[in-house]
Image (tube, rainbow, N blue to C red; front, side, top):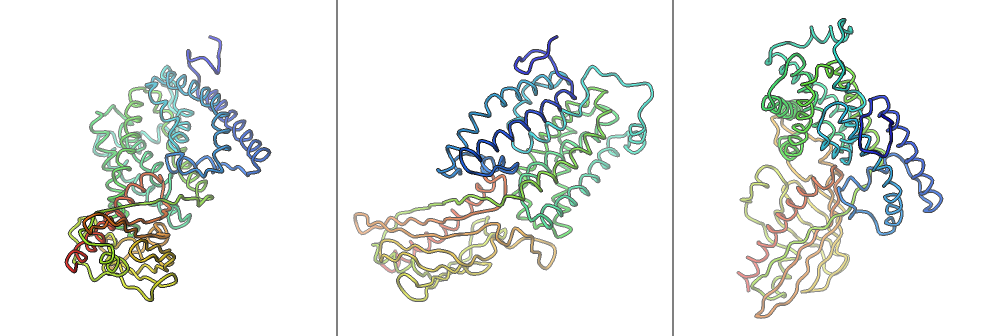
Length: 457
């Protein structure tokens, strides 16, 4: 059958798939560099492909960059078509569902998926009579029984995950796609690849092994003082889903004997690829600024509410579960001076926000910047204290404001706003957590202001 880059029919072998994938990417990248440099006077590097996708949305792209990205998207359309066609042909060649082509569009996972498709033998391959030396070695190293193979898979994954976390967090100072997307996917995939090496396992047992892998890695991170319980629990939902995705793909591969011949290259490629992703994304510290608004009506006039906005008395101990597990919460606020240039000090359970006043319109608007941020949480840990890097500068409040609108019947509409940045990716996933936490902080303050204003009205 005649091979075509454009037609859906047929299959493609792994060598041709790797060749065309690399050639097309090289052409696309250099074309993007040329367009960005000549027409938009911008530099374009490999890590720039992660910038719009870090947030999971184009909404974080600056208005002045829209023409550049729009042009690059239009130029990408034929490459997207060819990449989709080639990936479907490759999936057909190895006997996997064409729906897996969706991974072609997922940042970071598409790189890992491409590597796997370049290494997995086609389903028509048959085992040779004389096994390669690496297979004979794996036959001896990997236990045949399900408990032994699962234990080996879990042990290897915990060790490799700890080493990669050390590299990503302590060396590269990066909490990014490699750590929160690449690593969980690889944990699920490699654990099932080892677990099902000798014989076919059920889907349920494969998913269980992948989740145990994620759970043990989380427990190990706490045990060696890399992380606290709070951060591990926050990352767990994303990690569990990605690990099960990797486990499902490995489960589909176990039905073809030829896949065993690719197990060593696949393990090596994944172990090498994830640190490379981390190194690539660490070259660009870009992050977006986000806004969280929370509002409520208060049964008191703005003149009374204003007094409790600029400074408020000590709040009672929190009842909200998010604060009881260690997330920082507001305790009291005081202010030095009045008007623009005054400094508001908002004390939290972990320290103090220093907030120079920028706009002071009594009974209407109080706007401030933030020059000092305390730690965002107090980690739960079996040790006296730990200081993972994400406690320093990875969630930063840039400023905030309280806006008061007078309503009828001597009531006030009070709106609190916080502008913040965080440096953890996928940006959208961690934004969900940050927005939820900041909204809870707002509600704690607004409820207290409402109570004090109504009581003293």
